[in-house]
Length: 331
Image (cartoon, rainbow, N blue to C red; front, side, top):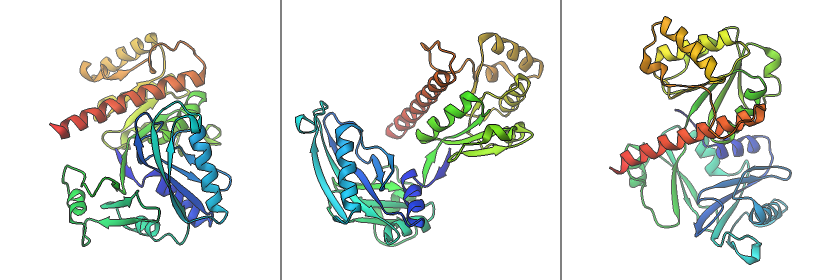
């Protein structure tokens, strides 16, 4: 895992630095069947949306409300939305959305950017005003929050409508070797699913039009596999079977990876397994290789279909790992 600021703080900071006003829309509470969970967020500017609070008519109305605020409306607002006939949505649940105009003058955003990794953002989502504060582990006050930052296992309970979240979040690091048709389709999917993606290739032209991704041009992709941190995820789909083999060999010899997926057929796997054994790689390590990649039930060979199936497989594994961690904490 690698740590970084939550995506929405990164985006708000970029917009503020560019002088572009934005409205942060947060699901303050969700009851019954609702399209998104509490704390889901969307950023609305005059011409763009980032993130989502659930789509459909709810998001359409939330976007319109946010843009009214950008045009001179209130700086903050809290609104209720029953997800029934009034919104023409059949979820049947109920959500509260918190709206806040954010810009260069937002003190909490400046504080969040300078607080360092051992910090938390405390938000009163029941307030129609801006009620956010940054708490640091070495600060004063908010003893329960500081204890949590220092390692207390339970998130502090500050009241039903108050959320506490770390200002550094763990995101899985995915090294994606190969910026071909599948790689370029897959990388933004994984990035949108809260992964940190390094798209690695030796071909400069393959890494064109990769804005928003961490693209690495290198003549020796194997060195990137060797230098990756413990617990990284590896997806191998380069333009060369020999290079695929070399990368997989390097990763299997390390043994400290979270996932190793290789594009290809069962025949390709069998040939590679024979080479791995010749290289002295233990059977237990070879068994951890996932090849072919992608969830079952999708037979299409189209690059986009392979990318979707692979993204779904990675998300399945990530959620299974997270469920295991939560079970350990609860035990």
